[in-house]
Length: 160
Image 1 (cartoon, one colour):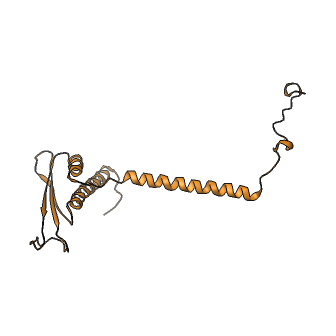
Image 2 (tube, rainbow, N blue to C red):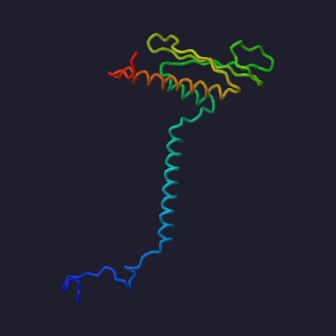
Image 3 (tube, one colour):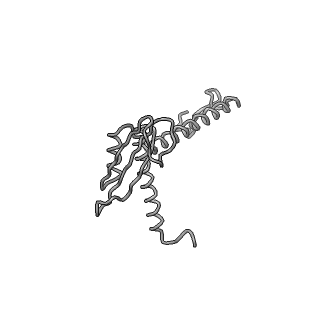
């Protein structure tokens, strides 16, 4: 009898393994493997997201020049001072066992071209001083964005 004439279509029977059930330990192993693979995928996704959200550190003066050019659209200036062993350092210099690098940087204003921000950072190396300068500017931008978002809000979330 065919499926068209009899109206019955057998997809699987007990002889073909359709009624056989897997033992409990196999089901448990498969569920455990799925859980481990899911946890690994979640860990990889979190790692990759954090990796791409973190800005890359500045490695040399050319990278610092490019990054600061993007962060300070209206111009900036930096001056690096290297202090040798036994050289007199300013009184506001942090205590250090090795010679220090001082980096003074300025950001200029859009309209007048005057100095809008002037900062000084100290570091044990030139590359670390450049990285500190870039991090300072990124922090300024983050704080400016927070101030703008608070200023744009109509309702005050604090009361005096």
